[in-house]
Image (cartoon, rainbow, N blue to C red; front, side, top):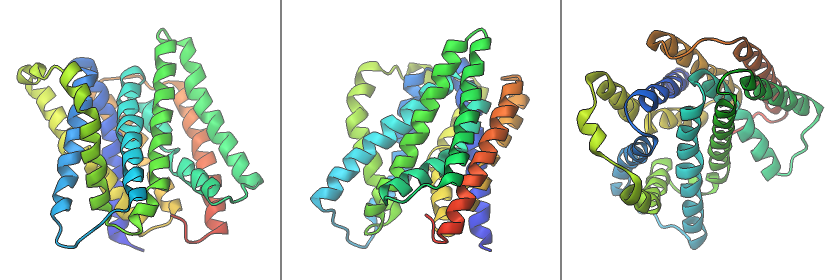
Length: 298
């Protein structure tokens, strides 16, 4: 058992769960969506850019350059943008519960990419996941802001799909280059393609008027909640099976719930329990079947 990888999964998923709650708090109390989005992209870039001064040489082919541009759009706008957009419209527990689906989306996309058969057990698992997701989304109509909450959960799902697609399709570049170098270029390109957005839309002045609580929450997000969780999870995925990755992802809703209660951000609704149970069962079935059929899962 790789203790360091297990610890990386626990810490990474715990930080991701905390992120969902802090995103909700920051967006509802302190700063606007556009500003937080810009700071998250910049923080990720700052985290990875030192990797570009590594001593070993690296050279990208034209296909890899095109792939990096596509992956940059996918990760910056597909993952980061829709994630924040979703968190702004839903609650942190729904968002973190849906996030546990990511390993399964990754496995399914990888299976389709390799033209593998799905099998009835995987289909049953996926149906359970879709059922749990539907419970979280449809039940929101019974609340005052049903339409807003539903759109938020849909945006979260788009973000998760983008993140999983990035994980699957970036693998070709990772086979030839170090992960840190690839991600440095992904976020460097991300800065370039979002610079016009920064210049024309974002007002940076609210940062000067943040109260101490807002400053502390923002620092936690930018220092511990941006690239660090994904780095830890990628570190673990390279050393453990997808079963571990899926099971430890349940630290996300746990940490989101605990912090959410501490900050007084939300109530725990019955549909959250039903959705989490169905999604948990579906994730277990899908990942277990994949592990039985292929011991060398990504």
